[in-house]
Image 1: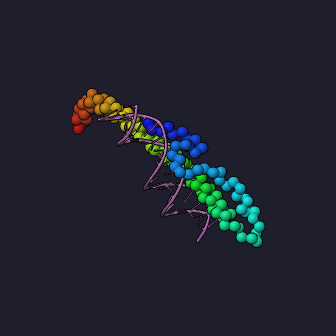
Image 2: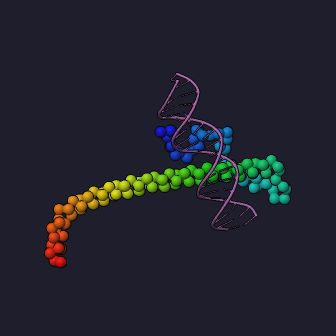
Image 3: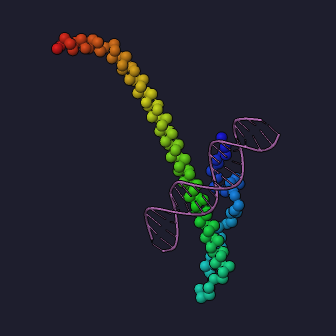
Length: 118
DNA sequence: CGGATCGTGCGTCACCAAGG
DNA sequence: CCTTGGTGACGCACGATCCG
């Protein structure tokens, strides 16, 4: 149900609320290349800050995707384990039943021989 | 059919811990 | 210290389903 979670790396159109993807880290060298003795202009500083922010957002976006994928896999693994354990439990119950039946047939004989021995 | 509600994924922010 | 990655929490958008 709900959104088909195709894990494409490109930002999905859904869920994009009020921000735009600009190409991050592009032209970063321009700021770096400003002459060393003159202070970078406020505009350059602002652009630098903006680029840093975009980079941070991009990395965090990636980290969040990775984290959620790990979390999903973890939960999936747990569910698989639960299914397997339930299956194993069912088989053990059946085996126990069989042993009980077997015992009810043979144990009376066995106990009588034990009584005789005593 | 159209609005209400639900379930889900996503991006972002804030916080924390670890490492340099 | 600062930087960086991991994570919880929040809000938003969207598709699915329900209901009048």
